Length: 474
Picture 1 (cartoon, one colour):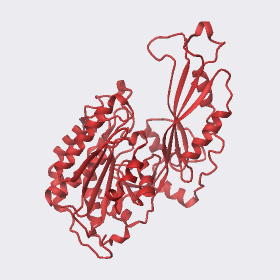
Picture 2 (picture 1 turned 60 degrees about the vertical axis):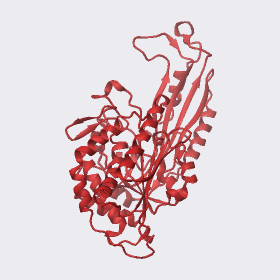
Picture 3 (picture 1 turned 30 degrees about the vertical axis):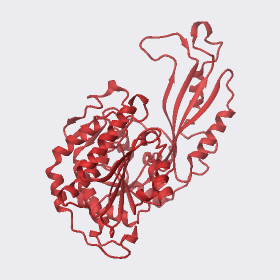
Picture 4 (picture 1 turned 30 degrees about the horizontal axis):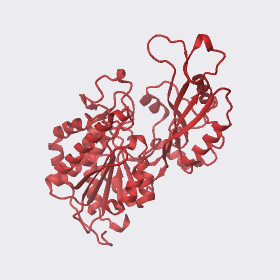
């Protein structure tokens, strides 16, 4: 902390020149990072996740970070690093995640998901955008400072986890156990999109998340559908009936009590969103869709940010191989994802869902619910000094003043940092809406990678005092 003293830091010109001169190497190193199939959700990739963590730790040591540690958790490691040689300057915590979503279906990839491939100005591969590429933006900014200037303009803590894609189940305990080592004046997270390469954006709100599994069980084993079909309850059919009843024809969620705590936003907020956010046509284009669904009284942008949602992510049951199989399955499973807005809590929605399922009577079928993810929503103060520093950083890095947008995604660490460490977070995205996060042919637009590094350099300089901030503002 500076305790009121104004610090002057020169613009990061030497670091900017270093970053520009080393762009080809930076891209090659990002490719090496992406090659690890660090799929946290699949036990078969546990060793790959651990190897990826070790590679990342080694890379942080090579660029000059200190105190680098790979911390084991009950599932996947957390990588920690720090550089604390500025006792009179603020501390910035940089968060990212090196785990990735499963690459399925593999048949839809143009190039192998873990063989990063450059096509035009885009690097393709699972994790290039979510979140290895965006996280690597800050790693390369740290390197540019340390290798060109020999020091950082602020103190820095790196917190890179391997479980974000499964809801960060061990992160809260890690934050509680290492409060002093993780103490920071502000945190920065880059795991969200901007609007376009020439339309950078700062995210000021994110939805919360709830991940559930709904299982339907019937007979003790699979049956011949010719011998038993029409006489014995079919769990797969019953599960589909339950799921179909979770929405009405207009797209509203029918779960009793679901909307009770949903905040009604005024005309001013909705008008500001209409000015700065994507229009319906843009969202349809980015989705590769021709028609929308959902609550007709809201725009598409409002539906995916201001409003909560329930999505069926997958159904497992019966036979799905080539040809046919006359089977009546004994069980079926559905994976459900709730996106929750401000004032809703995942705990309350999970309780409401379990009550609803308990009320459903299906002869011959037993329904059960398991919880896999819970994360709170987040709302950022747009007038915070660190946000103003981010605005100036984007203006220097991209050459354009950023707009403020809401995101429909969920990042558990944002609320956890506020709750456990009392640390405010700046959400600085560098991905594009069509980067195909969580889908085949994921990519990262390399001009955003380069501009992102410059933006990170300017952000660290601004937090360090080049804009005349006082540390107690943070």
